[in-house]
Image (cartoon, rainbow, N blue to C red; front, side, top):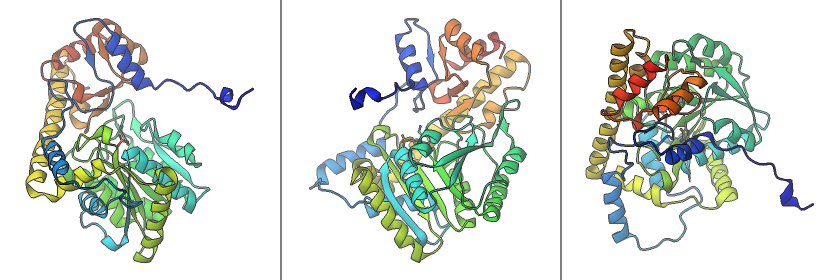
Length: 396
Ligand code: PMP
């Protein structure tokens, strides 16, 4: 038979399947808390003002669309290094490559690990973003899980996490969510991050930090604090940062790998390997989104406007969290949903059983992912009461 008839059918993407189910639901009142895209109270995902202004300026000023360099534009590396790392490490130690979104950054970072330590196991939190483990496998690396989420309390089980991380081998990699854990919403405190960083230096494992939501949790600087703390403590650190959410440029596919290397001598070799991996994978990374990010961050006026809009997005999600926790306290007479106000970022795992998630959908038109992850940005102040009523009615 023919080669192409040997392929296996692929499992449907659960989240995209949910989007289609929602779209086809004829009920007039329904609520989509599925896919991880920010939406405002009107349900839209607008182009951010500063990004729009940068695009207009770029259209006027851009004279060529010839190739950039293999690792992307050095101006983009600089603004992103500053945004993510600040002054946490000596800049001469940082290698960087623009990538196809945060997903591309993870993939290139793991390709780099495969070159440096082909036998490494990559440890991921239980649970983690569903794309992590398949990407690790695609890069030819083994994966394992460390305990993370305490389903009973909807919080991090820190002692279990530390117990598991203590058993990680020196040549292994630990994948950490820098802020706004996806899918749970539960995060470490800074003192806990300090303990993690100390343990990483003791075991000699390499941290790989996935930073996809900087600015969506406690603020731009606050959300980078854990990443900076780990990078400052460990001899080397890999960071995969995404600009999809905090610049609202999902479809432009903008991300970056930052590799904090042991010293300036190692930096050159790592930089060469990142450029080579980009070359092998797609030659040159996309530039449009990276250029917009660079323009916004380099212009004081655009940057101030971007930060103000990002802050509005962040505080609106926090407000929705508090409102939902309050409404649930009023309806259930208990504090067991207080975790919703403690969680950070776009998601919270509600902790509902699969039957209850199905009831929310079938009886109330409320769509969330099967593991009961809900996108807080899918709510608005007007729809929170209906969600609280439905959660209480389903006995969650
Ligand atoms: N990591 C995590 C944890 C994410 O949630 C996402 C986006 N869903 C990404 C990485 C990748 O984002 P993108 O490739 O769209 O930049």
